[in-house]
Amino acid sequence: MTSEEKAAKETEEILADDPPDYSDQDICVNQNQDDNPKRKGSIWQTAKNKIKITPKDATPVDWKLIGLVFISMFTSSFSLTFLFPFLPEMILFFGYQETEKGYYAGLVASMVFAGRSVGSFFWGWLSDRMGRRPVILMTIFGNGLCCLLFGLTVNLPMALVTRFLAGLANGTVGIAKTILYEISDDSNQAIGMSILSMSWGAGIIVGPAVGGLLATPVKKHPSVFLQGGLFDQFPYLLPSLLVGGACFVVLVVDFFLLPETSKRKQKEVDVEVGEQNEELEKLAPESQQAKTTSPSGKISMSAEDLYCHTERAVYEVKLYQSCQELHKSHGTNMAAVRPRSVSENGAMLTDEKLTIEVEVKEKKSFLDKMKNTTLFRIFSMPDCTKAIFLYTIFSFSAIGFEEIFTVWASTKPLYDGLGFESDEIGMVLGIAAVPMLVLNLFIYPFLNRLFGTKKTFIICGFLNGVMMTVTPMLHLLQSSSPSLLWTLLLVLIIPQKIMTSCSFTATSLFINNSSPAHMAGSVNGIAMTATAIARTLAPTIGGSVFAWSISSSLGPPFDVNIAFFMFGLILWGTSVYSIFIPESLNKKRVESK
Image (cartoon, one colour):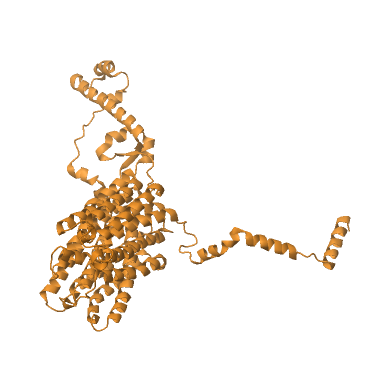
């Protein structure tokens, strides 16, 4: 046994007889750990891990950017819904009758979507070129300004014009969805879109609550607001002021914090190649054509490269044209052509090039120009067309139900309505939206992971249709049991709101997943345009059907139930149509390289 081994053995025997006391050290260590801020934060970290709403392998969510988009979307839904509780009352304020208010309320509600149908594609197109940040700032500003003007309306034409302008200026939703598309992937886009749906829910909560509580303040709070004052002359100005103020606050926050998310950092010029531009294709080097030509028939080059190629094209075409003139005057004899060519053009052309004839292309036909437009290219993609169509029809039924629900709730019991005041309608919509705001963050991502986007939409659409058609039957309880009426009303409306939010989230994912990256803004713009047209028609058609049903007094099934059944039937139709949506739209589009 060596000396080292003997020393080690003696040390082990000493430690066995008299083990060291580490209690003081343990206490010191524990005290240091307790004083460590990281240990204090372990409870918070544990809670975050417990309530984690994304899969373990998911890409981290950019919460800061999601939050900024959240408040931007909030201004859109806030400005859209704040007038719903008092709109029927506003129509009566304009001097119309009880039986007419359904039609005119639907007309006013539809004008914001008429404006969107005109402006949405423009805002999407502009965001593809200017970037997302400046365009979303412009839309928030315009929306807030138009909401302020709406509060100053005293007649129906003014209300129609201001709501149309509000829709025209509001391109926020499409751009917000495009931003989400650019910052997410398949692993986290469901949760991202659910959060954006939460912003819609937040607007639905705050909007009707603000509108219902603050409308006609002189009537509701005569001790605070004096008769003959500003708010007596403009009874709907106070909620409009609050909505406009919220828009301007969000505008300031976004101005300082919202970054640009568009991937098009470099200015590029798309040069068409193919049958219509064979000359430029010849001028571009073969190596560049092989690398940059895309399946869409375009090559991308910088502005500087394009300038050089253009100069080269102009010069060589002049040489070709000079050769043509020489061939006409001297024939094809190279010995006669060469001296004249060299004297005029220099010795730049080979004998082979001197024999080339340049074909002067005719101008493009109108049809060829149409085929090259963004609109035509988008609708030539079947996946985009199906997704946009589904989103449009679903929006028609969803917004139609929202509009006729408030009209029906405010209608007198004599006409099978509930006879609610504007503050009661705001309370119903606000209470129903609270669970949607909280639960949708967990419900939709869970359903999407379990069933996929397509099956989730089918399930939610079918259940939503059932709840829509059953809702108007609650008028039978209006006089006999008000407490039971409120209970059943919330039991129906709360899940209906959740199903609607999940369906909107699914359709938004369909559109994003069908879109090429470089056209995401335009695709969302066209989708918003198409759905705006449907939403323009929905309140008008729904309000007209409802007004006809209570004025004709035909009885079931042509009473108040007919309008609800119509939108429920359309919703079931969207569930059937969604069966034909490709399974590939469950995931983000894979870009070809």
